[in-house]
Image (tube, rainbow, N blue to C red; front, top):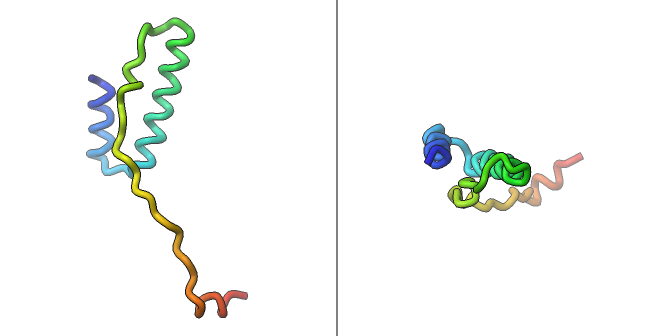
Length: 70
């Protein structure tokens, strides 16, 4: 429950989806470590899935821009 509230707070802060995914990946890694060390019995971070980040293509130079590149 706390994890979902934290994710909701990150979305309210209007962070980029990529940033939220990185933060969640760090928390998942921490939970995996705690589970492996026997500090926690189960991980609640496994069920948290952020929104998909939009895919964008890089901008391509126009022929005129290519001619002016030194």
